Image (tube, rainbow, N blue to C red; front, top):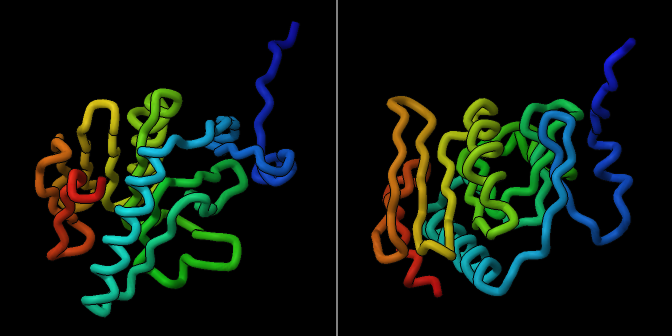
Length: 180
């Protein structure tokens, strides 16, 4: 007797979702996304704004894209994510549909419904896809977990009161309490 096979979804299935329904696709599995709360959006918008201003002041070539923004991590049809913030320094990865390949820096603002995704599934996926820096901002714990995936890999835990250095954008430090 044959074993039941799990359905493998593709980006086509993501695009076929009803209007207003958001989901991500990781290794052919669909993960629904709950609407963000107010603190999530406040952190996201202020962080994206600070990063954008830093890049503009320095004449940098990177671009900042807040969610919803499509990231096709592995340039295949089984992986589609919408990070809260994507910083992309390689203009060749940006097209009219989103980002083809791994952004240089991804920030996820976690919520009770996304904790497992952000700390486990996405952590592994982003690292193996080639993301250079990954931050998980946790408003419930007032903590930021940072990961550097290039060179000598590193991981650090910061509080909202700490000045957090940005690896990908030299000269930028972020203090989350200043954004609230």
